Image (tube, rainbow, N blue to C red):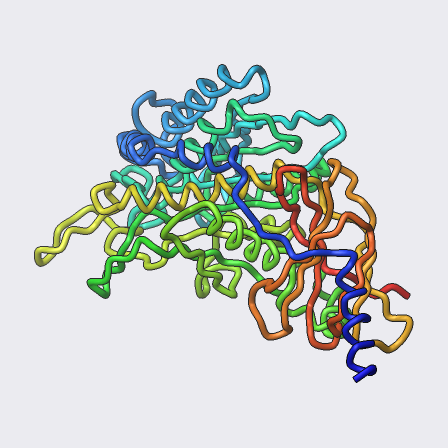
Length: 449
């Protein structure tokens, strides 16, 4: 009997330094989420469609038609929102001339990414969070630059989401910086995203997360009659594409095949998104993108940044990459009438909740370590405070090795925590937490030698 009493006392001593927390919504973020408007999203998509085609190789000097006109319109929206931001937003079109490559670029072409930067309020916080959609569109022939290519869902939906996010967040003040971008050239080979990712590397941007939105506004597929606007896919790679040769040994030794930067971001997106958006499940897909396909997050992934892709649950290929026509009573073409703008609203809300939570959070904890000096069935973690922000405390996350999501969160105000759980059987990570409960991205511990 005394033996069992001693065990209980020891177990209680483990728990004395931490507590499990009940996670609640941040009222400020909930209020921002409530402002996302399906009517605004629909108006943006219809305006984008009105330019006829937004093909990357289409005209740039026509005021009403083509990629040039559509870029100028998006810029005008960003400038409108900038006027309400007390000088925190700057808007521009980042242009460059792409040389013909003999493939999907058959002549020299001016390319441009439309960008709005919401500058963070803390000069010592250099973190950047990016949200993107691609402005260009196409029909069946990827080189057809003159035919009408409405691109309502692909990717008017993602571009509209980015515009709406800029509208709502323009008046907000965040410690970190948010960049809203409508990239060009996705259909010709991720050209705009590649340019932006390379620029980020060259200029040493501290990008902590990229949320890419592409084809996210239709609620049904062309092969079933099922209509479903209650699920959104988030694609994320598990093993890092960046310097995998240098990291492979540690990944194998520590068993971290499912814990790369992008996968951690996807888990975060699911938890935070479902916290704020009703009747929408974030479905994690354990792939960087759809089977043998790609998107604008990929150039960031391959350069070592945490980046994921949001897409609707069921793509409808009658309304994607199609010449406009009717055959055997079936209408083909990417028109806005085939979209579900309530679904797009919810998907935009997922983006907003995550951007705001990330931008309000402290930076990620540094030097997160797990003690391995002796054999033990308990686990002790240590870490250092983040470079940016002043945390209220920290969450230590825990999940069984076969579980896809974090199962428990333990809160502490210390920089060290001992848990009565074996590192053999669980994965752990540490997040910094702000006064208003906003969590940083989690950091997986390394062995403390």
